[in-house]
Length: 471
Image (cartoon, rainbow, N blue to C red; front, side, top):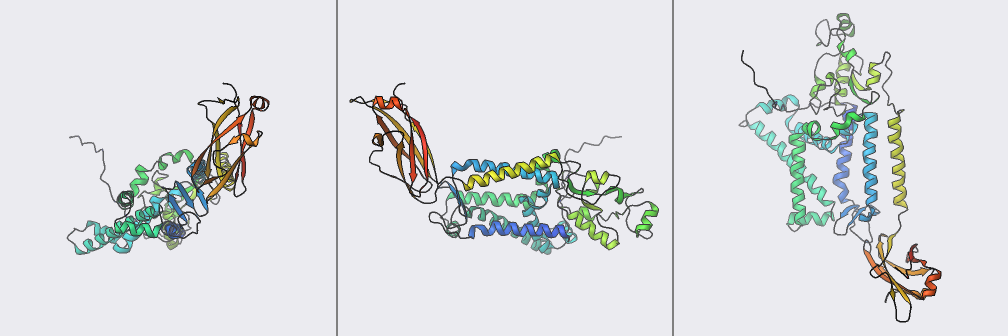
């Protein structure tokens, strides 16, 4: 008997999902439309500003600032970005521990854009059987040429629109849009549009479920956050299989009583749960890496159960612990776990701290450093001079003037050159050269003092400093 060669790679079978109706599908559609409305319309939302682009959300790269409605974020606020990333990560862990891969099923960019591409495909090519028929037809078929060609043209249009909208966040949208189509925009704009158009089309039109199955790292480490109490999509195998396994609904096996008498479960093996799955898995085989917990199989199965006059919930959101219990209760979210409580407490504390930090941010940043080369200078009259650099960064949202004085040293000892006050434009930084000159006996009595910085808006801060008379 000849040996069969080992097949290391299997030919990809395209996943062509069937459309379905139900509460989870309606929720997914609502999230999709809301996300698209926010993403595509936000660059066009005007916002009055005294200094800056009159747009609600702008990433002003030349000005090194990010304007989010009334909040202006500068590179100095990198700590906020760290907090936001931490909060996002913990929120992901928190939701996963409670509801499995709910983020993947409803809110992930890959899911949203793939859903939109599938909707375009369904609108132009019809339901799943028609799309499969078109896929098998030769390219010389006029219907296939027209429908598939129109589908791909709209896919490219949506991918281009997605990329173009992303670029519009980096400038005044009406002007930047005209510049892009007139060929006068910066080269970076065209490179970004081209790169995002290609990657969006590749991810949503070509790769699709492969992103979830092989590329996305979240699907790999999600198992570390699952517990037996995690609520996610499950197939009730005991009810569906029975003692004799699943069986199609035929004569003598249509009612619950007939199926129970022959030992068959409620699953009629219609495979609709497989056909509606965007990743092409069979949920009846148990929890799998490819399941993104979108709930479409729940809608499909409940629709079949309603037609057969069976009880709903053969496929449902439930926990593994509840399914395996002797007396299962109604599915519910179980948050009374140490891990979940820890995630929740971290979310509340870090979110509260971020809000507090934003609301209590000073209108300007300041720092004072002593010039150490040389550390001090002895003048011809015996006085000693120390020099300092005072850095001011204006974060107020408008131009400000600042006055600098001293506390703990004679006012006349401060020398700022010809400046009585310092003008700092919004978002800019200025370094002020200051010097303190004291008699040796005065410096010996009180070697420490403070620089007092007062803005024209009335904000006042002080920086401690030290006067050196010897190395």
